[in-house]
Image (cartoon, rainbow, N blue to C red):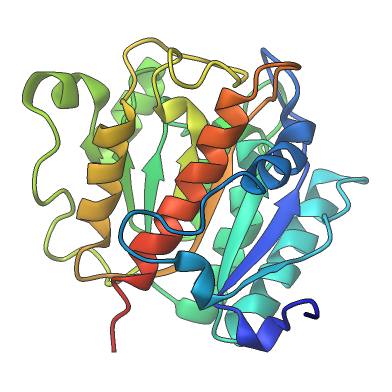
Length: 277
């Protein structure tokens, strides 16, 4: 049986092993390869159906050499190509900065799509450690693209970021509220865009589940809370792309790699069962 053809596959995996602006733990360059390796151990049946039947095409890893501007441009060009095929780009990080290139492409092709960010951190700084392309700034760049933003799971941010959230009226379901009241049936406001881009930083999960990340924060979501939250935001809406970022593999510790792979496959299943006309 030959390699799947791009036109026959709904999901287009784009590995982006970027590690340029990490500020604490390191290792995100190894994230995409670890996820792909772990994915070989997944069951095709996810408990409901077989998401792989929608077709999965894996692109060669994007080069992450050169300036951040060049890398972001390359990501945007690749994602644009996938979107123009009518397919769903799925970026494997790498650090969270990779989302900017994808969001630029989404803005160009789909216009006013909404961004739903699952993350321990707000990532709303204007610059960090001298870079406006830092992983700590990626959602600030999303706001500059005039894309509506909703944040889930945040539990660490600067006071300036909190002021910006209030000023821009950024929607949020923070981790402390989840701990107190659980995941609501409906998370997004009714007027949030129908088309969504999901960006999932693995540190949204509690470090007891996801220790292999550069900036772990206690008090994160558990697996079923995350699954329910993703299912809630997908209800009645169309995912045009998503990424899973900030996995920093630990030698000999396979569980986080497999968890990230399982997360991606679970989202495939949710998307496939939620296809809108």
